[in-house]
Length: 582
Image (cartoon, rainbow, N blue to C red; front, side, top):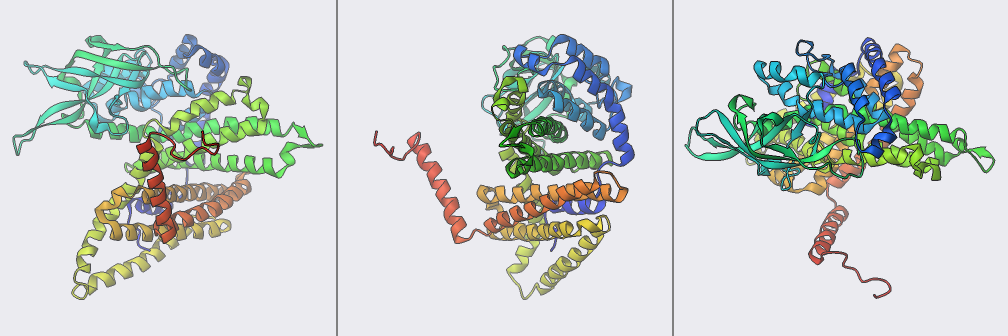
């Protein structure tokens, strides 16, 4: 079938055909060697339970991380950082994620998003001025976007920045909520509405701009640390800006370019989350295995019972998929890919939901002991909950995945729709369309097969079939709904879930094929994981794509769920009569 969506361009041509591999063995060894000091330091000096109890990262831990250069992992060496590749960075955050997500958030909020805008959009002068002190940890950074009235809708922010009469400063006023490192930071990346004059119409409109703000500018303050469910060791606070004078040279990315800056920061910073969460999952799995291999019930180790084996097997499979996604993505980024926002969103969604599953099942395997604080699994579960919310909620990211792909497909299908108004007069276009679908399908499949180990060919065929079916359904949805597809969130969720599974299939096929070809000791184990995942993923994709055909039963379900929701919202709570009548 014709690969018409950006998702399929991304998942098919680039990842399946061009880069059917994760990081090379040499790269993998290097990243492991580079990570050893951080592993040792993290395990020796950091106490996650104590951090959680104190609701802060202890000062000596922060100093130790600064000594390691952990605050400037991807800052260029010339600016005082370590200059790590994306793959090396992913390995380090995986280690931190396996030990303490609270520390991970402190480091991540600082460099993954806090000063990422300076790295991506900063002028040479801005980089030279700010990066050295940020890289060594002398200054901590924070990313200030979210406001009380703007969560997922970044365009609705109220914070304003108005140019001073002398044209030398922007006067910044507003507040930001739930800012990680908000009480620690000296440097803030702040987003505010600025008046922008349209050169063509002369009309002035408010657009989002980004600024580098120093606490030392004055007019910057913060509230007390928020009391949170998890990641208690990280500092989260409200930040206030009152007549803060920001020099015009601290504008980041141009006047009115703030939305682009924000989205690029979040897309770029999001890639490390899957790696961190794969580390957390490894920790949970180890806890579960240690218990199951020693705990006896009914005369046998519980690891020998099918119910426990299914839990462990599924946890291991989901960790493998998450880890494979993380390193396929980082490898593609290191090879120069700039269009990775869909893969980053997919890996964030899958990783955060898989990690929650692993923590939950680990607690279940440990039973009562898993519920106790001393095992640390309850802390991990509390820490994990935020990952489905921040840096783009999973619900919004699913819409982003589906609509980005649909937009690409829609541009192609516009011409096809025009031709449909006069099918006899445009028969050539339809013939070309049909022939391209057939020829491209054969070319893509044959090209991909060259990279896949023969023992995994059945899983590969399942993947090709899923990609073809996916493309057909996206086309059908666009032909049916056109621009109104944005309102079909029941369908878009299922499109996104299919894309997530397809990327998972591609990632594990890539990794397991390489392991088999290079003769790794774990190759057969990885092949088994890949086969099981592809079997189950294909079943899920089939079910989701079938739902997108909106049969009578599916339409009734969707409209029924919509009605139930509207009814209880209008009622202000549950509507049904209690079974006891009172």
